[in-house]
Image 1 (cartoon, rainbow, N blue to C red):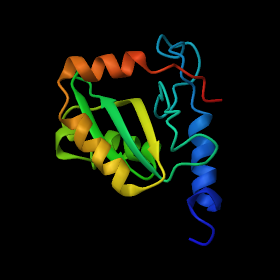
Image 2 (cartoon, rainbow, N blue to C red; image 1 turned 90 degrees about the vertical axis):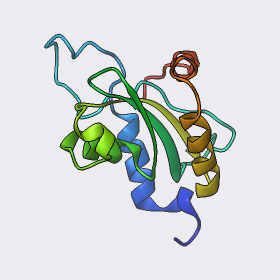
Image 3 (tube, rainbow, N blue to C red; image 1 turned 135 degrees about the horizontal axis):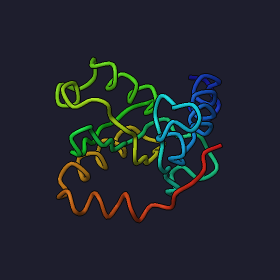
Image 4 (spheres, helix red, strand yellow; image 1 turned 180 degrees about the horizontal axis):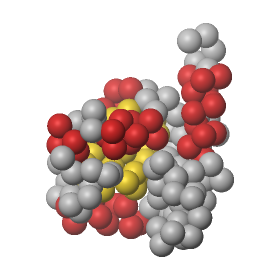
Length: 139
């Protein structure tokens, strides 16, 4: 990529698409269209402020209530892959999944380190992290 990930038109387009996914739950009761994936929050970590992130750590809630943590370049598309049954073996039998938490990083190594940290947390700590993250309307 010439000029870095913040200037890659495809990544910018994906990031803008993620911003348009509704975060409210008004669509659950049949009121309005259901988005493909619900994004409940996004990171405002120092690595992502003012630029488009190229690497993400995400947490999804599975249909059985369990949490799954992963890494992706495009977390919205990755959640769609999980929901198609072609994602991780763990999520394939626990569909659908809902994207709850995102953290963006400029460097892949930072994202993978954070993924490892999150995977080491107990469920209660992950739930607290999700609850503590400011809920944003990504429109």
